[in-house]
Every structure is written in structure tokens, then in C-alpha cells.
Amino acid sequence: MVKKYLSKIYIGIIFIFLYAPIVVLTVFSFNESKSRGNWTGFSLKWYVELFQDGDIRSAFYYTISIAIISAVIATVLGTIAAIGINSMKGKTKAVMLNVNYLPVVNPDIVTGISLMILFVSFNTSFGFNTMLLSHIVFNTPYVILSILPKLKQLDANMTEAAMDLGATPMYALRKVIIPEIKPGIVTGFLMAFTLSIDDFIISYFTKGEGVTNLSIIIYSMARRGVRPTINALSTIMLSVVLLLMVLINKRSNVTEKTK
Picture: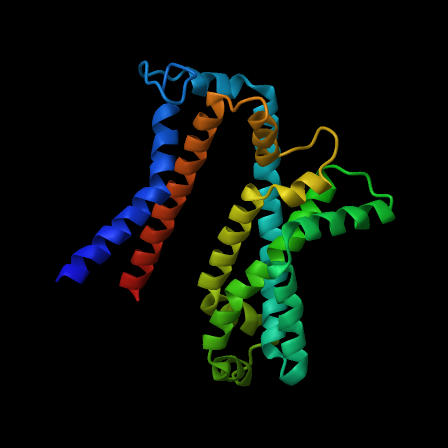
């Protein structure tokens, strides 16, 4: 009994440690004062200033644009690659899996410098395209790792049965394989989207003049002092993520009840 209560207390402390900073950030985004340790009254002025700040709006635009585009492309490439890797056998499959693991375990700073050198060697102008390509590169392996477990659970006889009944390989892919691995595809997309928004190091080495993202903006502000508008922006992004999670979970529950 004592161990049971201690384990609950331990888990509670962990959750407090994880979520207390987020709660503080959200609360002080409505603080009238610039001080992050002194509550002077409720105000929405930081949200108003947020939408009037051209630098933050530009960074937000590039962050969301690159995150969505890179996540979509990485999901498509990752799905195709995962299906191809799953169909391999023996040493070839092991080699391809290890090649896919390498970008995941590789330090971000090594990946960022490598991509920067690659773009320089091809005389590529740094900007939106270089940052987008970089995000696609480091997102794709995570998508593959999200989809592979679903492919392992897939019964190979289903695809063969569909083709025996007259389905073409492409039709079997669209009607049999894709619906079965859809949860892995959605998970891969969300992971790629989140990683893209969160990335700093790789973006820092591949950005161009006039193109930046929120993580770089916040880093540059940290040296001068983070403005409360960042609290407001973080609160909005957190709210959007929570809303997406609720909608996805609600849809999943409806799908399970239907089945």
C-alpha cells in the first residue's frame, strides 16, 4: 500500500516538473507587466503586440509553411520508403534499416553542418528552399520508423488475396495497404510536423537572408531578453496542438466504436 502511494506521488512530481513551466508561461502571457515574476493584472496587450510584430509574423509564417510542406513531402517519401524496406529481405533490409537509423542517432549539429557544406559545394543560394530540403531530409527517417511497425503487423496474405482477385498492385496499395498502415502514416506526419517546428540547429545552418523560423528568433531574443510576446505566441501554439490532439483522439474513438 505504501509503495502504491509513493509511486503515485513520484508520478505526480514528474508531471508537475514537466508541466509547471508550461502553466507559468501560459498564465504570464496574460500578465500586464513585462516581469515574469510579478503579476500586475490581466491583459491581452501581448497578444495584440504579437500580431503587430513583423519579425515574429514573418518567422511564424516560415515556420508553419516549412513544417507543413516538409511534413507532407517527408510523409509521402517515408511511406514509399517504408513499404520498400519492408518488402526487402536478409542483409539488404538490415543495411537499409541501419542507413535509416543513422540520421536519427546522428547529432543535429553534424547533420546541419553537413547539409550546409553540401549546399555550398553546389553553389546553392541559402533561403527558403535550403531550409525546406533540410527539414525533409531529417524528417523522413522518423516517418519511416513510424510506419514500419504497422507494416510488420500487416498480413501479407491480404495484399496477395487482393491481387488474386484482380486488383492491380497500385489498387492494392491504395485500398489495402494504405488503409491498414494509416495510423502509422498519421503518426509520422505529426512527428515530422512537430520536429520541424521545434528544430533550431539544422535550421540555423541552412537558413538564408530574410528567412528564419521561430526557434532562431527566440534564440536571438534570449541574448537581449525574451519579450512577453513570445509567451503569447507559445500559448497560441500550445492551444493549437492541444486542439489537434483532442480532435485526433475523438476521431480515433469514433472509428473504434464504428468498427
